[in-house]
Image (cartoon, helix red, strand yellow):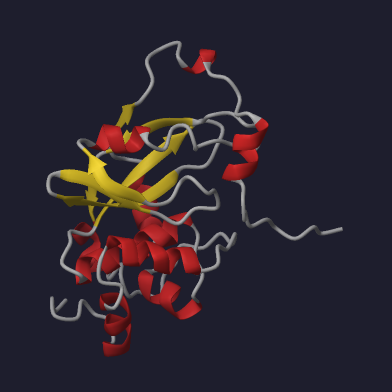
Length: 207
């Protein structure tokens, strides 16, 4: 892989470099429709299809961070009775921020103001819930430098990136709650639930 283009075509590279910074990358993800298909597209395919879900959004964000001079880092937020959330992370002036695609309002961008990855992960706790209104976030992983998958052409392959998802199951995760805390959690109130679901994509009714 040549570091000047990372395997992307000139057109793809111009698009990614035009995003410039983490906030520009987040705006691009926000403007992109959310899709519910069980896919694991690479950044190249996401650019072509102009749609993504959480995992694919994190992959695209990591690639965009890389071509704009940041480290291509992600981490995994693990939930109970809910789906996990993969997030691209970046560091500025010693503080962590995040870029994410989500079907829920609050599980997206974070400004780089968090002193640790634990602080960053906890910023998602109140807004991370399932449709039963349960707060479900439980652990966060070590950061993953996506260069470890360069030999598999993770940024430009036409094949699914399930090898990344499978790797996230194997790495260390850190608990956010002490024993007993989860049993004392309250369900989300109606107003917060409706705000968190604003604009949520849903599968068409088959009836």
